[in-house]
Image (cartoon, rainbow, N blue to C red; front, side, top):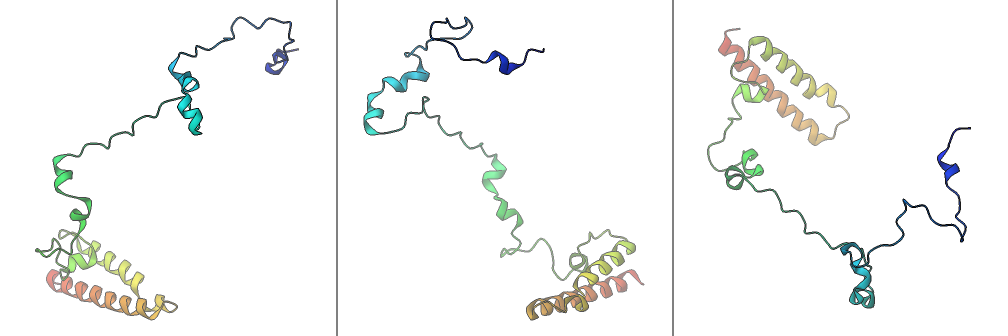
Length: 152
């Protein structure tokens, strides 16, 4: 019969000596057991934890760039300065780089037109339908402008 772990676990009789590999006593002067000797904690009713509290870890230090610019400032395009992107630029309206090919322009226009088409918004609230109407007009104007620029 194989030696199973639970076969080795049995209750020790009072007259038996413990195995030699088991440590029988703990050093109460050790720092891990110092809470036993601290009477102030016991008298105040605090629950002893056995270990002293660690200091919370310090937050990571920021680089010079991170201290000057915040995440919000990098992505805030509503500032009073000149905007990074011109919202009337047809490439921006279609979400394309200025170096986009005609195939990329037509595929982006078709994809966005499908997304914002009024026939897909029948069950939407009136505010959403109006916003999508405005958006589809912007997309069509941007596409027409790019067609004119590209000579198509």
